[in-house]
Amino acid sequence: METYPQILLENRKPDHINTLAEYEQNGGYEGLKATLQQHSESDIIQMIDESNLLGRGGAAFPTGFKLKTVATDAPLPRYIVCNADEMEPGTFKDRVLIHTNPHMMIEGIIIAGYSIKAEKGIIFIRPEYESGAKILERELKLAEKAGYLGKNILGSNYALEIVVHRSGGRYICGEVTAQLNALMGKRPNPMQPPPYPTEKGLWDLPTVLSNVETFAYMPHIIRHGPDWFKDLATTDTGAGTKIFCISGKVNQPGAYELPMGIRLSEIINEYAGGMLNGAEFKACLPGGASTGFLPKEHYNIEMDFESLKKVGNRLGTGAIMVFDQHTCLVDATLNLTEFFARESCGWCTPCREGLPYIRDLLARIENGDGEQDFIPILEDMGKQLWSAYCAYAPGAVAPLQSLLRHFREEVEAHIHQKACPFK
Image 1 (cartoon, one colour):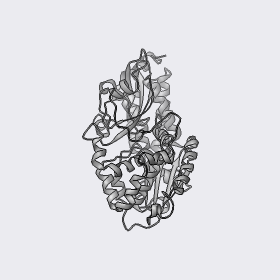
Image 2: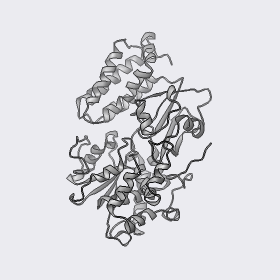
Image 3: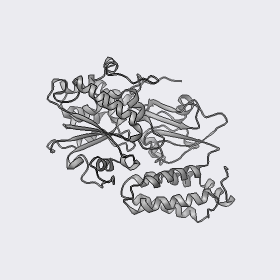
Image 4: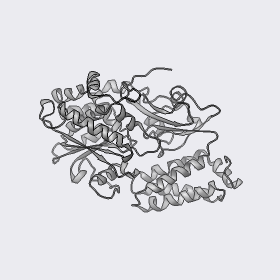
């Protein structure tokens, strides 16, 4: 098994949270020192942009471009927000990072905050991560005491305050604009840009929001350079490493930091310990619940954003959920649709009405009451949900659309046999 460089999980130890002193001993906050002492705000943005760092929260938006869209003459104060909500089923990388090395993401937030002249920082974290919230609150105080936060950071003219905000606990709060509404005490409905949050975000002020993993890479990019980061990937279209969360029918589920572009087969066979005894790979969700089923024909696919896009799928959060030949994918899709129907904010008709309708049709198919004309109805509903107000609904129907594309015979078997063939 090949050993790849560990960037974010280099000092990961069982049941151990890296202390501030340990982080400093391994180069921690050197990126921030270089930022404040050697670089202008535009320098930092340029380095992040040249690194091709794409957002690791699922949307894969270019991080450098996002920072660039904050106008130099934009009003103050400006906000930097870290999304630690992580409500995507199958995804737990941010929790691992917080419990491994919280100062890495804190340093990244400060560097990004400096690049846009942010004065206020917020970490938005889900209620189930209460242990993580307490860790962050404790370590933020230690960082401030050490001079990395607060006024005149490391003797510079830059000042930043970071607070931890506990979410109310809904999946929709992970959507950028819905999260901003939640932070302002409003109902967490998505907002349709323009204006974009980097122009008018929290309280109509410029706001940059990125994921825990995204921020954690920034200190390393500043220390080692954009080219170093790009060279970590195994494909020309990828950049950096990725924390892949693997669950399902494998021997060693867990979080693994591997190069962007590594093949799916290598992840499962080498790092996840292979399939369980007697299990054969049937399909997987490559990037969490809001991605499509990836069939066996793509078992050797390169795991980066562009490679998945070419086969009509998405890398998403990199949460790989593995299914074997004994798994009913109709039932799995029903389970996912139940979740999405429940977690919808209910703002627009396609999502509010469409997801419960899809759920009910799938339930009837799974329980032996399905009819052949349900399939074209489901296909049509999958298309209609792409007309929803935000990206929630298209993600929610990704499992359904891939089920009908790659495993249609399994759906038809349920209908013809008037029962689930797997039960």
